[in-house]
Amino acid sequence: MTKQPRELALLAESGRLLASVFELLDRTPLAGMSTLQIDEMVERFIVYDLQARPASKGQYGYGFVLNSSVNDVVCHGVPSRSVVLRDGDIVNLDITLEKNGYIADSSKTYLVGEVDPAAKRLVETTYEALWMGIRAVRPGARLGDIGWAIERHAKRNGYSVVREYCGHGIGRQMHEEPQVPHFGKPGTGMTLREGMVFTIEPMLNRGRRNVRSEDDGWTVVTRDGSLSAQFEHTVAVMASGVLVLTLRPDEMGMMAKM
Image (cartoon, rainbow, N blue to C red; front, side, top):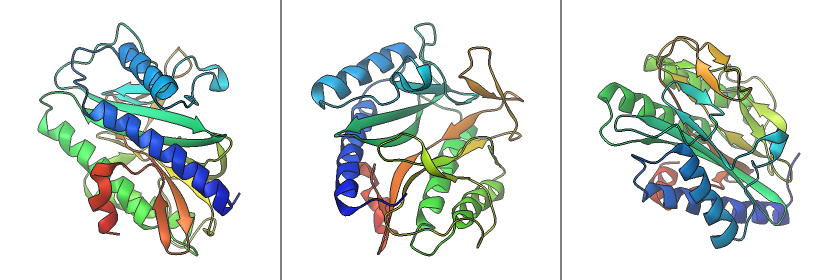
């Protein structure tokens, strides 16, 4: 379950490359693009520019490079030519990348054009909740500390936390132990050890936390039709605390606050 220094270095390289994919998306005008166009653009960039492999494609029979979850879609949204992003949408783009046998996983919720203030606040709070969870990571901490930090911030701001989906260990496989819930009680759960690598990926809903799966077998939506947002990073437990392996250049300020 714990990774050796050589493995951490390879995971950090995968994470650095994946961060560059989000830099590409950051400078791409998303309004007017279909989610399938975004998927195709990301695949070209990963394969041809980064000389890496989009790890989600083919995993569990999934046919695409990324998940594109728009508005009330909580997670696992399937790219489609018929889903075109419009002004006012929010969309989570969840991407995995494998290089030299090691996988990194990250996601970001984008605001498309002019977004309603209430939707913007949900997205901002979800991002804050992600960092609340990250700041709880250190040797000797417990998984429950991460979940508690996230859930407390969500509830203080009037949002609910999806419980059916969680973070996960990652390395040579996309999904490894442990599972990392985004709710919990401090001082409970597995003790974190130096060398552990896992994702933290809270999903917050404006309404109730309940979700349902659509008939395609992938797409998960809020049961009450409310908006949902998600952010995700791959992190490593280090002797000094936590290392965010998928950190983007624009997030250096967040690390400075650790």
